Image 1 (tube, rainbow, N blue to C red):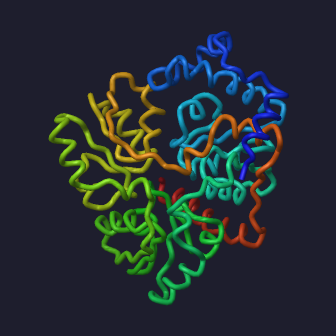
Image 2 (image 1 turned 180 degrees about the vertical axis):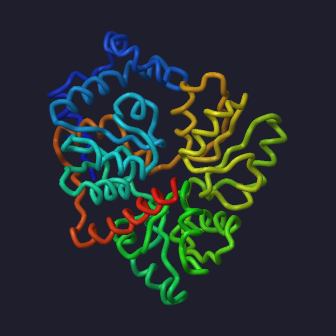
Image 3 (image 1 turned 135 degrees about the horizontal axis):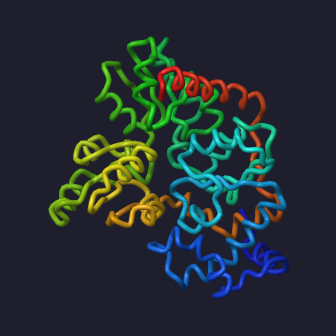
Length: 349
């Protein structure tokens, strides 16, 4: 756990981080990307950190990978690449920078390390975990294999390296249906998200069996919530992530992965939209789509919100919080991730 008092003392000795109107104005073009959702007083506070981080990236030969659920000052202010967990991991393997700062949760940093073992991967906060990733272990995979002998294990990328290593192939929320359909067996084991598995089962002829894990953000939504919201806000398009329970997905106007949601909203440009996913998703696309009014409510991921500008600056400055994956585990995990990538390319996804 970071000693925040020590962090602030050390950073204050090396960087000018006091709120600054001059700095905020100097970074006006950066602020324009988030001005609908970040207030001017907040930007005056954030701007000195953004300036320091972006300068330090150049010195350290580093890039920052920002997940779609990061807060706007991170997503727009300091991230070199943004996207979902797999998009970021694949980008990590392509960039020339030697240091990668993972602005996301721990399994994402592991995946980046798996695909880029020669690079230094830093986590701003090692306690930024994931309820879904932590819901299953390699023992859980073996338990499912014992129940369904011969059935292939399709594991969501939102899992630890250990679980990926114990699986046959990975999937994302955007390619899960195609991956499942491509399996030769009539029965497919999906782990660890029970709701993603159930939503896929509703779209395939395969028998899909699953581990009873879930995301603490998406499992909170109910179909009743959506029906009531629709009554109170007629004309609003309800757009759900497939990690939501099946009755929520059925109640929504559209369901898709993070990238699928972004494409849908960008292409359709509804007058009003409720994104039934993590809060920061809407905030991060609000300035790109000023014609769309994004309305609440939403649920925040407490793990994603552990990542801050202050912590990003700290790991870049100190080099602390490096992520390591046992080489033997990493090799097996890489095989399951690569199997997904290869199959996705073969299927034209």
